[in-house]
Length: 253
Image (cartoon, rainbow, N blue to C red; front, side, top):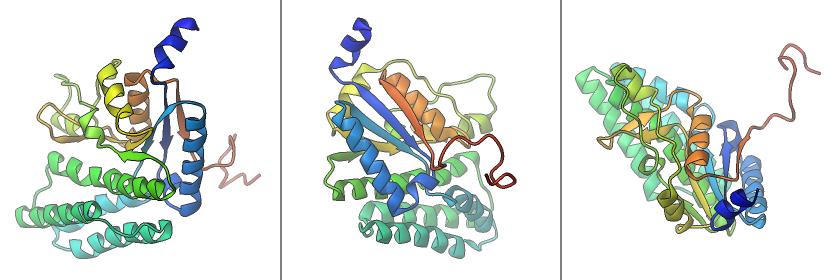
């Protein structure tokens, strides 16, 4: 115990991971703020890792398919509207960074339409935008709540391993990452703010390109970051009211 206390005395980290439904409404964001404040009060640096807004990953998949047929305007409009709706609900408005993500999606969709091709590299870039957009909005909400929060791009701290046996598709869309302790990363993040917010699901490869960790990869991201930061604890939050022993759709009670 003494060794563990010494290890974490300088900069103990707690990693909080939240899923898509947990970042999709104002009440849930108020909960995130409350949890982060509690962990700060316990004397910890806090890293918040979270998913795209609920349903957005599927909408990005549909955007790719629609772009092949040149019918991407409606899909783009729906994605933009969902994020602007959340901005309005959280009282933060739009931002230049958020508009930049919208523009990137539009440009990529137009490129897919022109080339009639979706590479795995392009798919990874498009899908990553879900987490990037959601965390950008969330960071501004927490700042508006008076919290000292920094937004951080996970791709500058989580790096895919080269796997000779993996397929090209696997390297782009189901990457694995090095998670050995990284004291320099801990110092970098702790110097940014007491609370840092970042993305699950995404990382970068040796060339600096965006890769994905596979569906459900935000839990993996949280575990990777907890290991790299030698965190005191990783908490994976969900918005169900307890532990279910059966499917609540068929067994309501």
